[in-house]
Image (cartoon, rainbow, N blue to C red; front, side, top):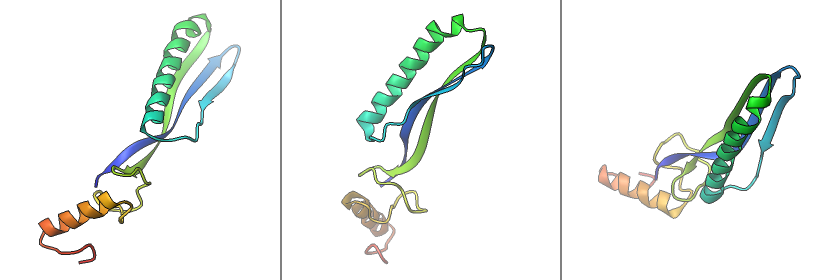
Length: 116
């Protein structure tokens, strides 16, 4: 099983400087996760960034910097569990696919069983 990067919280951070000073706006923070939800968050954040850049930035007399902020973590490729192990290929048996892949890898290296 492989260790994957996952975007766990996608937000759009908009920083305005200059006069008047508007400060920083933060949009985001949905606790729901999953590949489809994360993909939707990324699309929405990208669309917000394009709209703000196109419609607000030209009328603002200061620095404007929209950016997409992503909190990243490692997860199991098979089940999406948080990666807790030092190994890049075995997450301590978080799912049957993780266990099966570890057994197969050990067998291929001449070892037998997970604890061998």
